[in-house]
Length: 394
Image 1 (cartoon, rainbow, N blue to C red):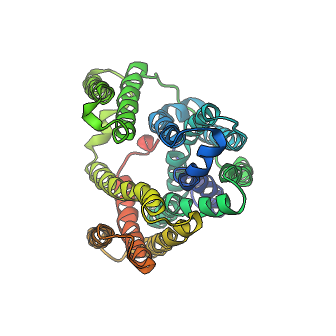
Image 2 (image 1 turned 120 degrees about the vertical axis):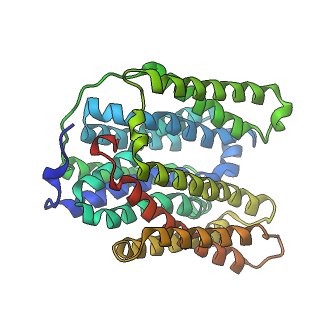
C-alpha cells in the first residue's frame, strides 16, 4: 500500500474532514437512534417486544463481523472506492429501513446497513490520520472521537424527537441527505490510495465470524430465555468458545492469517486497545440500558428521555475538543486517569437512580460522564496509533 505522506497538508483537508465526519456521525448515530422508537415500531410492524430487538441485534452483529474485513477490502478495492461504496450502501439501506413493511424486511435491511456501515468508522479514522501530520494527530482524533461518541449519545435524543413529531420511519430517512452530502464531498476531495493484492484468510474470517456472532446472540438472548437454564445459550456459548479458540490457534500458525499477530507487538496499540475496550463496555452497556429503564420503569415520555440523555453529548464534545489541544502540554496518562475517575463517579451516581429522583441528577451525571469519556478516548486513541505502522491502520 502506498504511503499516505503525499497528501498531508493538502488544500482540501478541511473539506475532507467535514465529509468524513458526516459519514462517521451518520453511522455512529444508527447504533442507538432506533432504540427509543422500538415501542412504536412494534405496533406498526406487528412484532412482539422480544422480536423487535432484532432490529438492533442484526445491525450490531453484521457490523461486528464485517469490521475486521475492512483492511482486506480496502487493499483489494482501494480505500477511497471502499469508503464511497460503504456510504452509498449504508444510505440506500437506510432508505429501505424507512420503507420496511414487516419485521422480517426491516431486520434484513438493518443487517445490510451493518454490512456496509462496518467500513465507515475504521476508514474514516485511517483517512484522518493520513491527511494530518503527526503533530496534529491529537486534534484529528479529538474530532473523530467526538463524532464516534456523540453519535450513540445523541441518537436517543434525535430518535425521540423524530418519532414523536413525525414517525419512526424518519429515524432512518434522516440519513439520506447526510449520506448524499458525505458522498459528494468524499468523491470530489478524498485522496486515492494505491491498491495492494493480498490473500484472504477465509477460514480465519469464518471462525471469528462464528465467535462474534454466537457471543452477540448469547448476550442479546440471555435475558429473554433466563440465561444458562436454556439449551440455546449453552449452544451459543459453545460456538463462541470454539470460534475464538480455533481462530486464535489458526492466527498464530497460518502463513497469512486474517489478523496479522505482529500488530500486537506494538505495546502502545495493545495498551490503548485494552483501555478503550474497558471504557466501551462500561459506557455502552449503561447507555443501552438507560433509555428502556427511563421508559418502562420511570415512565418517561420518548421526548423527555432524549432531553435528559442529550447533555451527556455536550460534555463529551467539550471534553474532546479541549483535550485535543491539551495533549501536547499534559501527560496523556494524567488525562486518562482523570477521565476514568470522572466516569467512575458518574456510574456510581447512576447506580442510585430511582423513580423519585430529580431530572437534574440524570443531567449532571451525564455531563460528568461525557467529560470523562472525552478525557479517556482522545489520549488513548492517539497513543494507540502513535507508533503503529501505517499498513496496520485498516
